[in-house]
Amino acid sequence: MITAAVIGCGDVSTVHLEAIEALDDVELVAVCDTDPAALTSTAERCGVAGFADHRALLDAVRPDVAHVCTPHHQHAPVALDLLDAGVHVLVEKPLAHTLDEAERLVEAAERGRSRVGVCFQNRYNATAQAAREVLGSGELGPVLGATATVMWTRTPDYYRAKPWRGRWATAGGGLLINQAIHTLDLVQWLVGDVVDVQGRASTRRHLIEVEDTAEMLLTHDGGARSLVFGSLANVVHAPVTLDITAERGTLSIRGDLTITHADGRVRTVAERRSGSNGRSYWGASHEALIRDFYARLDEDEPFWISPREATKALRVLTEVYAQSDLAGPPRTASPSHAR
Image (tube, rainbow, N blue to C red):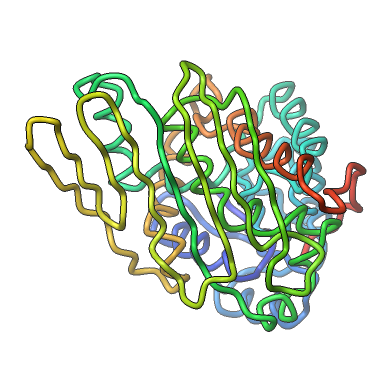
């Protein structure tokens, strides 16, 4: 039996706890949060020990695996403590709230023996997997480029409810690092590594430090070109879109995947629907990623969505921030303390 702990009992911890419960050979042994109400509620609901500090959790109950579901600025400090203790780590996105912190975690992960994975769960979507397979087969020819949109809405209450959001020092950014990062990751995973970034992030609607809107032009290794646009100023949550154009056809993800060949043939791949208590826009693939992470614990190779792999999207959005008229993300480490 593999023992697990969840550090951070906020919104996204729900899908991690559900996934752990669904695994026959994994036992949840502890949860951690600095918010007494969230900690008590989660510990009682799960029937496990609760800790207000992840270091106390490590001293009392050293799990085999820990899930880091804290606010962004605590991802790297908490994960580094876990690695020092020899614990396997699964980190929610982003890997860290700054590129500097992310690179510290990459180095620590590659030095140590523990396995580290990052939750870019949309790579496990049926549509993304099918798109990757089709593009890899070469049947559509070379990829010419892509367009992607993330047109969602947020209210002032969203930021008031969790004050760490909307701030450089704790979130590391806004739309790009917190919402659109999943789509940005899919674009670079499907189309190719990004070698040039031109972009701009801005604050159009919300009274926050960070951006709520961004656009970018990406050049990929091999010459493909992608346009990405996102905003939290939309009036509704519109479906995320990702369209990829190749020489002999197109792929379009709008919930489901539509593959259209130049000769007129069309194939559709349906996406799995989420049965989770979490938000629908998280998708249905957290459990698939978490199940796969546990299944690979004994492998010698790093988990395929490793810290180094997770820095690719973070590097792109950091460059957009650098090109924008914003205060910019922090460059110094933040205090280590779980929430």
